[in-house]
Image (cartoon, rainbow, N blue to C red; front, side, top):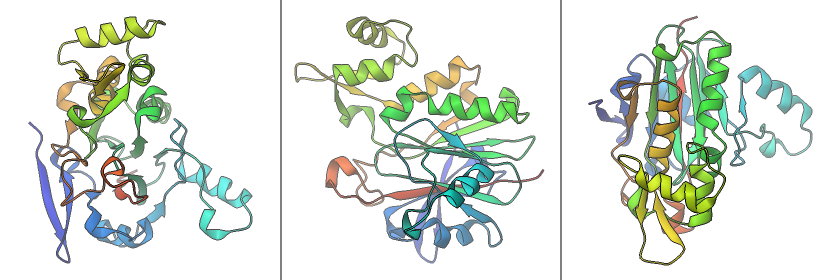
Amino acid sequence: MHTWHWRNWEGLPYLTCSLLANWQHGFFTHQFWPRSPQDLTPVLHSEASVYRLKQVHGNTVLTPQEVDSQVREITGDEESAFALADGLITEQPLQAIWVASADCTPVLIGDVRTGQVAALHAGWRGTAAKIVPQAIARLQAQGSKIADLRVALGPAIAGEVYQVSVEVAAEIGASIISQNDNQKIVQALHELPNSPLLADPEPGKVRVDVRRVNTLQLENLGISAEQIAIAPYCTYQTPEHFFSYRREQQKKVQWSGIVSGKT
């Protein structure tokens, strides 16, 4: 089993994963709110350049170079001068990349051979649109091999408390089940070993474990269970450490970030 460790920075807790031991990284708690990635990067590395996005629940994955060129095209309000995307993938060492989440899954990926990393915001929409496979395809285009990747899925809402409509479950499930009928997709999901779906007492509703769906997408790409770690924390059920949009209905987030390594 991969181990998760609580770290402290000036008395504030954040989480790291042994699978990503090669990289400075952290899944930060709400205790760091409202600090920005600019403020948080020095916790990980004093010299890394900082990249973040305006997240839009899609599956676009950008490099820092693409972020810079998009941002140069944006005029006007500085505060909104962020590229629109939900994933970042590095090209150079010492690039700190960040994603924000409040129930959605923050995914950090590292390549042990190249040192390059990815940070993704995988909510149900991003998961349905296969943002994680998308990022891995981009890493492969930069020379990564599947066997060298390490993937950590951070704190997110757990399946047992995440109620969605059958339609939403089918949309997410279509990313791993090749059927085009909602009922058939949901049925097939229920039949999977260690199913990502749980029954819900309300008609037309089910509960879905989005991190499990992401894990199945990874396995479909040939990534083994040993290369994947899932944080044993649910944002909804751990109010002492994490914001949950479902629980609080507030627009607050926690940040997760990772710094790329060697060339």
